[in-house]
Image (cartoon, rainbow, N blue to C red; front, side):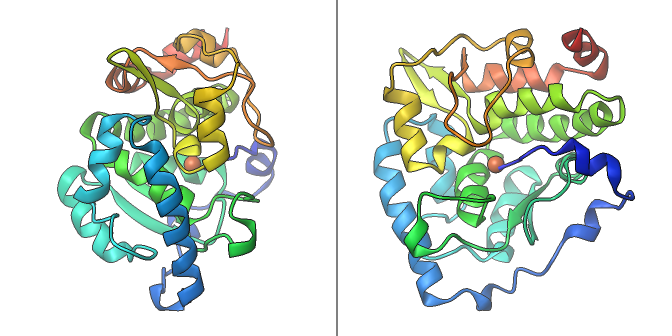
Length: 259
Ligand SMILES: [Fe+2]
């Protein structure tokens, strides 16, 4: 999950996004940690089955994510890069916003190189590899999302430099992390924050809360919660419609959204 903190971005020295990378060192994961992945996977997939956009579900076997245990990123990247040119890159935890968007601009997706503990399956201080891999990577194998995420990265770098980081963060949050999308007659989960959260996946679909139609203007004008379930969830007309709308947005359009 991307958790914006523009104060930190402004106060530190610039660094290249490569400075935040670490080795995955897959061997360091214990049997218990692989078991946490398997528990989360087995709990999440049956619920998402009929409630998440179809390309997400298709991405799981295409990428070999249906195999037990925490994925080894080298093997995952072999499949992912062949499909859309994206690669997963391990990071120790949250990276600053400008580095995050710079990674996306290069079709690199940061993966927190740790997993939550077995006794706190539903509590995350910061995004772990289950959120980052299971939540985000299946849709990175879907070309419209692959293009959108790179475009979001390029625009994010420009937006932060132009002082509009909050606007790009809202657009990202209300789609890539916590968006819903129509598929046929149904409203389905789109966002990784929902796809990887047992509690919020149920809440977003089943709770009696507002689900307004997604527009760039409304999403840009709507604050989000990073410390609680969202008070509303935007519903895009379709996954690909949301991807195309975001991909087409440029810095001039973003300035207009900022008012
Ligand atoms: Fe995320």
